[in-house]
Image 1 (cartoon, rainbow, N blue to C red):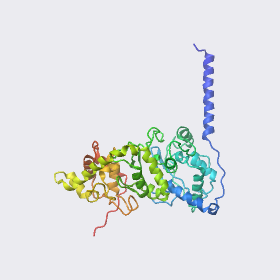
Image 2: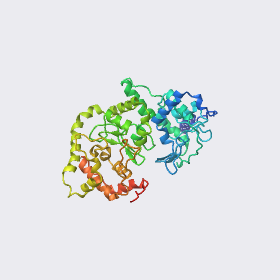
Image 3: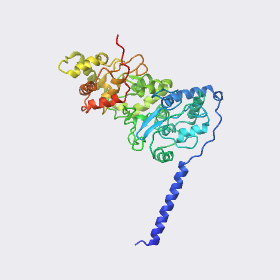
Image 4: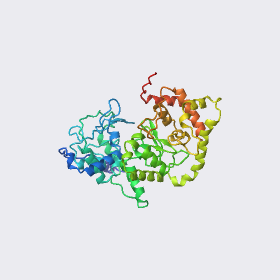
Length: 448
Protein backbone atom coordinates (compact mmCIF):
# COMPACT_ATOMS: atom_id res chain seq x y z
CA UNK A 1 0.00 0.00 0.00
CA UNK A 2 1.06 3.54 -0.62
CA UNK A 3 1.63 5.34 2.63
CA UNK A 4 -0.09 8.55 3.65
CA UNK A 5 3.16 10.49 3.32
CA UNK A 6 3.69 9.20 -0.23
CA UNK A 7 0.13 10.15 -1.18
CA UNK A 8 0.67 13.65 0.16
CA UNK A 9 3.90 13.92 -1.79
CA UNK A 10 2.15 12.80 -4.98
CA UNK A 11 -0.66 15.27 -4.39
CA UNK A 12 1.80 18.06 -3.73
CA UNK A 13 3.68 17.15 -6.88
CA UNK A 14 0.47 17.21 -8.92
CA UNK A 15 -0.45 20.59 -7.47
CA UNK A 16 3.03 21.84 -8.27
CA UNK A 17 2.85 20.65 -11.85
CA UNK A 18 -0.61 22.19 -12.17
CA UNK A 19 0.69 25.47 -10.85
CA UNK A 20 3.62 25.39 -13.26
CA UNK A 21 1.27 24.61 -16.14
CA UNK A 22 -1.04 27.43 -15.06
CA UNK A 23 1.82 29.89 -14.88
CA UNK A 24 3.05 28.71 -18.27
CA UNK A 25 -0.39 29.15 -19.80
CA UNK A 26 -0.71 32.66 -18.38
CA UNK A 27 2.71 33.53 -19.77
CA UNK A 28 1.47 32.36 -23.17
CA UNK A 29 -1.98 33.91 -22.89
CA UNK A 30 -1.13 37.34 -21.53
CA UNK A 31 0.44 39.85 -23.88
CA UNK A 32 1.79 43.32 -23.20
CA UNK A 33 0.23 46.31 -24.86
CA UNK A 34 2.24 47.87 -27.67
CA UNK A 35 2.63 51.60 -27.20
CA UNK A 36 0.31 53.74 -29.34
CA UNK A 37 1.78 55.98 -31.99
CA UNK A 38 0.67 59.21 -33.58
CA UNK A 39 -1.38 58.33 -36.68
CA UNK A 40 1.12 58.25 -39.55
CA UNK A 41 0.57 60.51 -42.53
CA UNK A 42 -0.38 58.81 -45.76
CA UNK A 43 2.64 60.49 -47.35
CA UNK A 44 4.93 58.46 -45.08
CA UNK A 45 4.23 55.41 -47.25
CA UNK A 46 5.32 55.01 -50.84
CA UNK A 47 2.67 55.03 -53.56
CA UNK A 48 3.92 51.61 -54.65
CA UNK A 49 3.44 50.12 -51.18
CA UNK A 50 -0.06 51.59 -50.87
CA UNK A 51 -1.05 50.19 -54.28
CA UNK A 52 0.33 46.75 -53.46
CA UNK A 53 -1.56 46.91 -50.20
CA UNK A 54 -4.78 47.86 -51.99
CA UNK A 55 -4.55 44.80 -54.20
CA UNK A 56 -3.69 42.55 -51.26
CA UNK A 57 -6.54 43.95 -49.15
CA UNK A 58 -8.91 43.21 -52.01
CA UNK A 59 -7.59 39.65 -52.29
CA UNK A 60 -8.02 39.21 -48.54
CA UNK A 61 -11.60 40.60 -48.67
CA UNK A 62 -10.85 43.13 -45.93
CA UNK A 63 -13.71 45.46 -46.89
CA UNK A 64 -16.17 42.59 -47.16
CA UNK A 65 -15.79 41.62 -43.49
CA UNK A 66 -15.09 45.10 -42.12
CA UNK A 67 -18.09 46.92 -43.57
CA UNK A 68 -21.55 46.80 -42.04
CA UNK A 69 -24.14 45.20 -44.34
CA UNK A 70 -27.24 44.85 -42.17
CA UNK A 71 -29.57 47.67 -41.17
CA UNK A 72 -27.92 50.93 -42.16
CA UNK A 73 -25.01 49.98 -44.46
CA UNK A 74 -21.70 51.23 -43.17
CA UNK A 75 -18.65 52.92 -44.63
CA UNK A 76 -16.04 50.57 -46.14
CA UNK A 77 -13.47 49.33 -43.60
CA UNK A 78 -15.26 51.03 -40.68
CA UNK A 79 -16.28 47.68 -39.21
CA UNK A 80 -19.49 46.53 -37.49
CA UNK A 81 -20.09 43.63 -39.89
CA UNK A 82 -22.18 41.00 -38.08
CA UNK A 83 -20.63 37.54 -38.12
CA UNK A 84 -23.02 34.91 -36.82
CA UNK A 85 -21.24 32.01 -35.12
CA UNK A 86 -22.52 29.02 -33.12
CA UNK A 87 -21.29 30.87 -30.03
CA UNK A 88 -22.98 34.21 -30.69
CA UNK A 89 -22.59 37.20 -33.00
CA UNK A 90 -19.22 38.90 -33.37
CA UNK A 91 -19.00 42.37 -34.91
CA UNK A 92 -15.90 43.27 -36.88
CA UNK A 93 -13.63 46.11 -35.87
CA UNK A 94 -12.99 49.47 -37.49
CA UNK A 95 -9.74 49.20 -39.48
CA UNK A 96 -9.66 52.74 -40.83
CA UNK A 97 -6.87 54.94 -39.36
CA UNK A 98 -9.19 56.74 -36.95
CA UNK A 99 -7.24 57.45 -33.78
CA UNK A 100 -10.10 56.77 -31.35
CA UNK A 101 -12.20 53.98 -32.86
CA UNK A 102 -9.91 52.51 -35.54
CA UNK A 103 -6.28 51.49 -35.87
CA UNK A 104 -4.80 54.93 -36.38
CA UNK A 105 -2.56 54.60 -33.33
CA UNK A 106 -1.36 51.12 -34.19
CA UNK A 107 2.26 50.72 -35.18
CA UNK A 108 3.32 48.28 -37.88
CA UNK A 109 4.56 46.00 -35.09
CA UNK A 110 1.09 46.01 -33.49
CA UNK A 111 -0.60 45.34 -36.82
CA UNK A 112 1.82 42.52 -37.61
CA UNK A 113 1.21 40.92 -34.22
CA UNK A 114 -2.53 40.97 -34.84
CA UNK A 115 -2.11 39.35 -38.26
CA UNK A 116 0.41 36.75 -37.13
CA UNK A 117 -0.76 35.88 -33.62
CA UNK A 118 -4.29 37.24 -33.23
CA UNK A 119 -3.38 39.77 -30.53
CA UNK A 120 -4.73 43.33 -30.43
CA UNK A 121 -2.55 46.38 -29.80
CA UNK A 122 -3.73 46.51 -26.20
CA UNK A 123 -2.68 42.88 -25.65
CA UNK A 124 -6.14 41.28 -25.83
CA UNK A 125 -6.53 38.00 -27.69
CA UNK A 126 -8.62 38.38 -30.83
CA UNK A 127 -11.46 36.01 -31.65
CA UNK A 128 -10.71 33.68 -34.57
CA UNK A 129 -13.68 35.07 -36.51
CA UNK A 130 -10.80 37.24 -37.67
CA UNK A 131 -8.86 34.68 -39.74
CA UNK A 132 -5.43 35.31 -38.25
CA UNK A 133 -4.86 31.55 -38.48
CA UNK A 134 -4.59 32.20 -42.24
CA UNK A 135 -3.11 35.70 -42.28
CA UNK A 136 -0.23 34.41 -40.14
CA UNK A 137 1.12 32.76 -43.29
CA UNK A 138 1.55 36.07 -45.13
CA UNK A 139 5.03 37.49 -45.63
CA UNK A 140 6.23 40.47 -43.61
CA UNK A 141 6.35 42.50 -46.81
CA UNK A 142 2.74 41.78 -47.71
CA UNK A 143 1.57 42.57 -44.17
CA UNK A 144 3.51 45.84 -44.30
CA UNK A 145 1.88 46.78 -47.61
CA UNK A 146 -1.63 46.09 -46.29
CA UNK A 147 -0.78 48.27 -43.29
CA UNK A 148 0.36 51.07 -45.61
CA UNK A 149 -2.87 50.87 -47.59
CA UNK A 150 -5.10 50.94 -44.51
CA UNK A 151 -3.20 53.83 -42.96
CA UNK A 152 -3.55 55.79 -46.18
CA UNK A 153 -7.37 55.61 -46.09
CA UNK A 154 -9.68 58.30 -44.77
CA UNK A 155 -10.23 57.92 -41.00
CA UNK A 156 -13.81 57.07 -40.05
CA UNK A 157 -15.07 57.51 -36.50
CA UNK A 158 -17.26 54.44 -36.01
CA UNK A 159 -17.98 52.35 -32.90
CA UNK A 160 -19.04 48.77 -33.51
CA UNK A 161 -21.86 47.02 -31.70
CA UNK A 162 -21.06 44.81 -28.73
CA UNK A 163 -20.50 41.13 -29.35
CA UNK A 164 -23.23 38.80 -28.09
CA UNK A 165 -20.98 35.96 -26.94
CA UNK A 166 -22.19 34.51 -23.63
CA UNK A 167 -19.91 33.49 -20.77
CA UNK A 168 -17.41 31.82 -20.97
CA UNK A 169 -16.98 32.31 -24.73
CA UNK A 170 -16.60 36.06 -24.21
CA UNK A 171 -13.44 35.58 -22.15
CA UNK A 172 -10.64 36.56 -24.46
CA UNK A 173 -7.98 34.83 -22.39
CA UNK A 174 -9.55 31.51 -23.35
CA UNK A 175 -8.70 32.26 -26.98
CA UNK A 176 -5.11 31.54 -26.03
CA UNK A 177 -6.11 27.91 -25.46
CA UNK A 178 -7.71 27.87 -28.91
CA UNK A 179 -4.48 29.16 -30.40
CA UNK A 180 -2.41 26.53 -28.61
CA UNK A 181 -4.43 23.86 -30.35
CA UNK A 182 -5.18 25.37 -33.74
CA UNK A 183 -2.84 28.25 -34.60
CA UNK A 184 0.33 27.39 -36.52
CA UNK A 185 2.04 30.77 -36.79
CA UNK A 186 4.60 31.76 -39.34
CA UNK A 187 4.96 32.81 -42.95
CA UNK A 188 4.23 30.20 -45.61
CA UNK A 189 7.17 28.03 -46.56
CA UNK A 190 7.36 26.76 -50.13
CA UNK A 191 6.82 23.05 -50.66
CA UNK A 192 9.81 21.77 -52.68
CA UNK A 193 7.66 18.94 -54.06
CA UNK A 194 5.69 21.47 -56.13
CA UNK A 195 6.49 24.17 -58.67
CA UNK A 196 6.45 27.93 -58.21
CA UNK A 197 2.89 28.38 -59.50
CA UNK A 198 1.51 25.76 -57.09
CA UNK A 199 3.35 27.36 -54.18
CA UNK A 200 2.09 30.82 -55.11
CA UNK A 201 -1.45 29.44 -55.26
CA UNK A 202 -1.03 27.70 -51.92
CA UNK A 203 0.34 30.90 -50.35
CA UNK A 204 -2.66 32.89 -51.53
CA UNK A 205 -5.35 30.26 -50.92
CA UNK A 206 -4.12 29.23 -47.48
CA UNK A 207 -2.96 32.67 -46.37
CA UNK A 208 -4.22 35.94 -47.77
CA UNK A 209 -7.44 34.69 -49.42
CA UNK A 210 -8.17 32.09 -46.69
CA UNK A 211 -10.27 29.88 -49.01
CA UNK A 212 -10.57 27.01 -46.56
CA UNK A 213 -12.09 29.33 -43.92
CA UNK A 214 -15.42 28.95 -45.74
CA UNK A 215 -14.94 25.67 -47.57
CA UNK A 216 -13.80 23.51 -44.64
CA UNK A 217 -16.20 22.25 -41.95
CA UNK A 218 -15.65 23.38 -38.37
CA UNK A 219 -15.26 21.34 -35.20
CA UNK A 220 -17.04 21.94 -31.90
CA UNK A 221 -14.52 24.64 -31.00
CA UNK A 222 -15.02 26.57 -34.21
CA UNK A 223 -11.72 25.56 -35.78
CA UNK A 224 -11.35 24.05 -39.22
CA UNK A 225 -11.38 20.26 -39.13
CA UNK A 226 -7.81 19.23 -39.87
CA UNK A 227 -8.90 15.92 -41.37
CA UNK A 228 -11.45 17.42 -43.76
CA UNK A 229 -9.80 20.29 -45.66
CA UNK A 230 -12.05 21.76 -48.35
CA UNK A 231 -14.84 19.25 -47.68
CA UNK A 232 -17.45 22.03 -47.86
CA UNK A 233 -19.34 23.79 -45.08
CA UNK A 234 -22.37 25.98 -44.36
CA UNK A 235 -21.68 29.72 -44.48
CA UNK A 236 -24.04 32.71 -44.31
CA UNK A 237 -27.12 30.53 -44.95
CA UNK A 238 -25.50 28.99 -48.03
CA UNK A 239 -23.37 25.88 -48.48
CA UNK A 240 -19.80 26.46 -49.58
CA UNK A 241 -19.31 23.33 -51.72
CA UNK A 242 -16.34 20.98 -51.47
CA UNK A 243 -13.32 22.10 -53.46
CA UNK A 244 -11.55 18.75 -53.27
CA UNK A 245 -12.21 15.41 -54.95
CA UNK A 246 -15.41 14.96 -52.92
CA UNK A 247 -17.13 17.66 -54.98
CA UNK A 248 -20.12 15.76 -56.37
CA UNK A 249 -20.68 17.53 -59.68
CA UNK A 250 -20.38 15.14 -62.64
CA UNK A 251 -17.87 17.29 -64.56
CA UNK A 252 -14.56 18.09 -62.89
CA UNK A 253 -13.60 21.52 -61.66
CA UNK A 254 -10.47 21.88 -63.79
CA UNK A 255 -7.88 24.60 -63.52
CA UNK A 256 -9.52 26.51 -66.36
CA UNK A 257 -12.99 26.18 -64.81
CA UNK A 258 -11.65 27.46 -61.48
CA UNK A 259 -9.87 30.31 -63.23
CA UNK A 260 -12.92 31.42 -65.23
CA UNK A 261 -15.08 31.29 -62.12
CA UNK A 262 -12.65 33.13 -59.85
CA UNK A 263 -11.65 35.72 -62.44
CA UNK A 264 -14.93 36.45 -64.21
CA UNK A 265 -17.64 35.07 -61.96
CA UNK A 266 -18.81 32.28 -64.25
CA UNK A 267 -17.46 28.83 -65.06
CA UNK A 268 -18.70 27.67 -68.48
CA UNK A 269 -19.51 24.14 -67.27
CA UNK A 270 -20.58 24.94 -63.70
CA UNK A 271 -22.43 28.23 -63.57
CA UNK A 272 -22.23 31.65 -61.94
CA UNK A 273 -20.92 32.99 -58.66
CA UNK A 274 -23.71 34.11 -56.35
CA UNK A 275 -24.31 34.89 -52.70
CA UNK A 276 -21.16 35.06 -50.53
CA UNK A 277 -18.94 34.20 -53.51
CA UNK A 278 -19.97 37.27 -55.50
CA UNK A 279 -17.89 39.80 -53.55
CA UNK A 280 -15.01 37.32 -53.37
CA UNK A 281 -14.85 37.38 -57.15
CA UNK A 282 -16.02 40.86 -58.10
CA UNK A 283 -14.81 42.83 -55.10
CA UNK A 284 -11.68 40.83 -54.36
CA UNK A 285 -10.00 38.53 -56.85
CA UNK A 286 -10.91 40.79 -59.78
CA UNK A 287 -8.39 43.30 -58.40
CA UNK A 288 -5.55 40.80 -58.22
CA UNK A 289 -3.06 40.09 -61.02
CA UNK A 290 -4.34 37.48 -63.44
CA UNK A 291 -1.29 35.32 -62.70
CA UNK A 292 -2.25 35.18 -59.03
CA UNK A 293 -5.81 34.08 -59.80
CA UNK A 294 -4.43 31.47 -62.18
CA UNK A 295 -2.09 30.26 -59.41
CA UNK A 296 -5.04 29.80 -57.02
CA UNK A 297 -6.90 27.89 -59.74
CA UNK A 298 -3.84 25.73 -60.36
CA UNK A 299 -3.57 24.92 -56.65
CA UNK A 300 -7.27 24.12 -56.25
CA UNK A 301 -7.27 21.90 -59.34
CA UNK A 302 -4.43 19.94 -57.79
CA UNK A 303 -6.41 19.57 -54.55
CA UNK A 304 -9.38 18.11 -56.42
CA UNK A 305 -7.17 15.80 -58.55
CA UNK A 306 -8.59 17.30 -61.73
CA UNK A 307 -6.03 15.66 -64.03
CA UNK A 308 -6.95 12.18 -62.83
CA UNK A 309 -10.70 12.74 -62.91
CA UNK A 310 -11.04 14.74 -66.13
CA UNK A 311 -11.02 11.77 -68.58
CA UNK A 312 -14.58 10.89 -67.52
CA UNK A 313 -15.94 14.38 -68.15
CA UNK A 314 -16.96 13.88 -71.79
CA UNK A 315 -19.39 11.09 -70.97
CA UNK A 316 -20.91 13.01 -68.07
CA UNK A 317 -21.22 16.17 -70.14
CA UNK A 318 -23.07 14.31 -72.89
CA UNK A 319 -25.52 12.85 -70.37
CA UNK A 320 -26.13 16.25 -68.79
CA UNK A 321 -26.82 17.95 -72.09
CA UNK A 322 -29.21 15.17 -73.09
CA UNK A 323 -31.34 15.82 -70.00
CA UNK A 324 -31.73 19.46 -71.04
CA UNK A 325 -32.63 18.55 -74.62
CA UNK A 326 -35.32 16.12 -73.44
CA UNK A 327 -37.15 18.95 -71.70
CA UNK A 328 -37.45 20.79 -75.01
CA UNK A 329 -38.36 17.88 -77.26
CA UNK A 330 -40.51 15.62 -75.08
CA UNK A 331 -44.11 16.54 -74.22
CA UNK A 332 -44.40 16.90 -70.45
CA UNK A 333 -48.15 17.43 -70.12
CA UNK A 334 -48.54 14.48 -67.76
CA UNK A 335 -45.93 15.80 -65.31
CA UNK A 336 -47.03 18.98 -63.49
CA UNK A 337 -43.57 19.47 -62.01
CA UNK A 338 -42.04 19.43 -65.48
CA UNK A 339 -44.62 21.96 -66.65
CA UNK A 340 -43.68 24.23 -63.75
CA UNK A 341 -40.02 23.95 -64.70
CA UNK A 342 -40.78 24.69 -68.34
CA UNK A 343 -42.81 27.76 -67.41
CA UNK A 344 -40.39 29.21 -64.88
CA UNK A 345 -36.91 28.05 -65.83
CA UNK A 346 -36.38 26.38 -69.19
CA UNK A 347 -36.44 29.55 -71.27
CA UNK A 348 -33.10 30.55 -69.73
CA UNK A 349 -31.60 27.19 -68.75
CA UNK A 350 -32.32 24.99 -71.76
CA UNK A 351 -29.29 24.01 -73.84
CA UNK A 352 -29.37 22.03 -77.09
CA UNK A 353 -25.71 21.95 -78.11
CA UNK A 354 -22.79 19.77 -77.08
CA UNK A 355 -21.90 22.24 -74.31
CA UNK A 356 -23.82 24.85 -72.32
CA UNK A 357 -24.06 28.33 -73.76
CA UNK A 358 -22.15 30.79 -71.57
CA UNK A 359 -24.72 32.66 -69.51
CA UNK A 360 -27.21 29.79 -69.80
CA UNK A 361 -26.07 27.50 -66.95
CA UNK A 362 -26.83 23.82 -67.37
CA UNK A 363 -28.39 22.83 -64.05
CA UNK A 364 -27.37 19.20 -64.41
CA UNK A 365 -23.76 20.34 -63.97
CA UNK A 366 -24.34 22.81 -61.16
CA UNK A 367 -23.19 22.26 -57.56
CA UNK A 368 -26.61 23.30 -56.28
CA UNK A 369 -28.29 20.10 -57.48
CA UNK A 370 -25.59 17.71 -56.31
CA UNK A 371 -25.17 18.84 -52.71
CA UNK A 372 -26.78 17.03 -49.78
CA UNK A 373 -29.27 19.86 -49.25
CA UNK A 374 -31.19 22.14 -51.67
CA UNK A 375 -30.08 25.27 -49.81
CA UNK A 376 -28.11 26.87 -52.64
CA UNK A 377 -30.78 26.06 -55.22
CA UNK A 378 -33.42 27.75 -53.07
CA UNK A 379 -31.18 30.73 -52.38
CA UNK A 380 -30.64 31.43 -56.07
CA UNK A 381 -34.31 30.96 -57.01
CA UNK A 382 -35.51 33.22 -54.20
CA UNK A 383 -32.79 35.89 -54.47
CA UNK A 384 -32.06 35.84 -58.14
CA UNK A 385 -28.66 36.97 -59.40
CA UNK A 386 -28.07 40.70 -59.68
CA UNK A 387 -26.05 42.80 -62.07
CA UNK A 388 -23.08 42.87 -59.67
CA UNK A 389 -23.00 39.09 -59.30
CA UNK A 390 -22.13 36.19 -61.55
CA UNK A 391 -21.41 36.88 -65.21
CA UNK A 392 -21.20 40.48 -66.34
CA UNK A 393 -24.37 41.61 -68.09
CA UNK A 394 -26.38 38.49 -67.18
CA UNK A 395 -29.05 38.59 -64.48
CA UNK A 396 -31.61 36.19 -63.07
CA UNK A 397 -34.88 37.51 -61.63
CA UNK A 398 -35.99 36.78 -58.09
CA UNK A 399 -38.87 34.31 -57.80
CA UNK A 400 -39.45 35.19 -54.13
CA UNK A 401 -42.99 36.44 -54.79
CA UNK A 402 -43.73 34.32 -57.86
CA UNK A 403 -43.20 30.86 -56.35
CA UNK A 404 -44.58 29.41 -53.13
CA UNK A 405 -42.65 27.05 -50.89
CA UNK A 406 -44.66 24.20 -52.41
CA UNK A 407 -43.61 25.36 -55.89
CA UNK A 408 -39.97 25.45 -54.81
CA UNK A 409 -40.26 21.94 -53.42
CA UNK A 410 -41.72 20.67 -56.69
CA UNK A 411 -38.95 22.28 -58.74
CA UNK A 412 -36.25 20.91 -56.46
CA UNK A 413 -37.70 17.41 -56.57
CA UNK A 414 -38.06 17.51 -60.36
CA UNK A 415 -34.51 18.75 -60.99
CA UNK A 416 -32.97 16.35 -58.51
CA UNK A 417 -34.62 13.31 -60.12
CA UNK A 418 -34.13 14.36 -63.76
CA UNK A 419 -30.69 16.00 -63.59
CA UNK A 420 -28.77 13.85 -61.07
CA UNK A 421 -28.24 10.23 -60.17
CA UNK A 422 -28.49 10.94 -56.45
CA UNK A 423 -31.24 10.04 -53.95
CA UNK A 424 -34.12 12.51 -53.63
CA UNK A 425 -33.96 15.32 -51.11
CA UNK A 426 -36.37 15.17 -48.17
CA UNK A 427 -38.54 17.75 -46.35
CA UNK A 428 -38.31 20.02 -49.37
CA UNK A 429 -41.16 22.38 -48.54
CA UNK A 430 -39.99 22.80 -44.95
CA UNK A 431 -36.46 23.57 -46.13
CA UNK A 432 -37.79 26.07 -48.68
CA UNK A 433 -39.57 27.93 -45.90
CA UNK A 434 -36.42 27.90 -43.77
CA UNK A 435 -34.31 29.43 -46.54
CA UNK A 436 -36.98 32.01 -47.35
CA UNK A 437 -37.00 33.07 -43.68
CA UNK A 438 -33.32 34.07 -43.93
CA UNK A 439 -33.99 36.55 -46.74
CA UNK A 440 -35.59 39.98 -46.75
CA UNK A 441 -38.59 40.15 -49.06
CA UNK A 442 -37.63 42.02 -52.21
CA UNK A 443 -39.93 44.86 -53.33
CA UNK A 444 -42.86 43.84 -55.47
CA UNK A 445 -42.57 45.16 -59.01
CA UNK A 446 -45.10 47.89 -59.71
CA UNK A 447 -47.87 46.92 -62.12
CA UNK A 448 -48.54 49.05 -65.19
